[in-house]
Image (tube, rainbow, N blue to C red; front, side):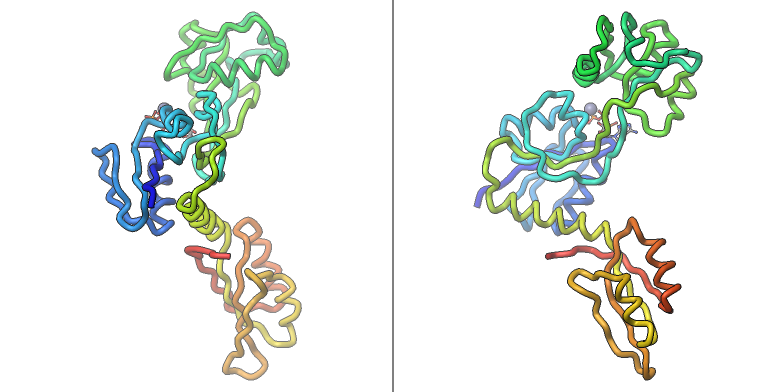
Length: 284
Ligand code: ATP
Ligand code: ZN
């Protein structure tokens, strides 16, 4: 059996969640912070710990078969890789920001201005698509938000999470350019071998489980149909009789996103003693 290699971030914002998702897939490995590579003992897989910036190229060139990295980093690297699965963490937005007192209203007004960024490729593409000309892109590797204060640039283009960093540097968001999250990538144009497919299936079952909750509730038989109508289940809900005559317990799953709305509707429909539990995996 071929031993696969997956590249994940060594340390930083994506490291912990990347390790967690692999562990939730049932993979057993030591997470030595100091080593660059570790072997999984119960799956033909090696994990490479790299700087996130290097991951797209490692996968593009086939040095790693798979990688977990932010879409922003892939786009910036211009790497030709296949997106296998969005992973739902490492979410962020890349925005152009301008000084708080700025009167700019239209991105065309950026013409002739200087913008400091660590993402020159993404910025250039955006400006081109929007036909904004003569912008000076000043590429710097970090602390981009101090650019305008130092007179280095008129605006910045960077990852914005809360807006707090912008505000404390006298800046405000101006234009949203890209949304990003961590994705699982593979080499472009190759068939997925059985080991990759197996891993992908496990990752998807972990993601599905995260999006859903297991619900158990009691309901009088007279209200059962109404309650069941609110609960899809994986196939359909399980109904178990209670010791008390005329009552049943209903077991089902519901989507995390409509959790509160569903719980309220279930109560209104006569559900009692509602217990909600996390799900580890859903294999379909
Ligand atoms: P490395 O040492 O691996 O090069 P880094 O300093 O470039 O790390 P991190 O700050 O750890 O990168 O961020 C990694 C990725 O996390 C980003 O490229 C982005 O996709 C994602 N991310 C999510 N939220 C944020 C945020 N608030 N700020 C920065 N990155 C974020
Ligand atoms: Zn980086």
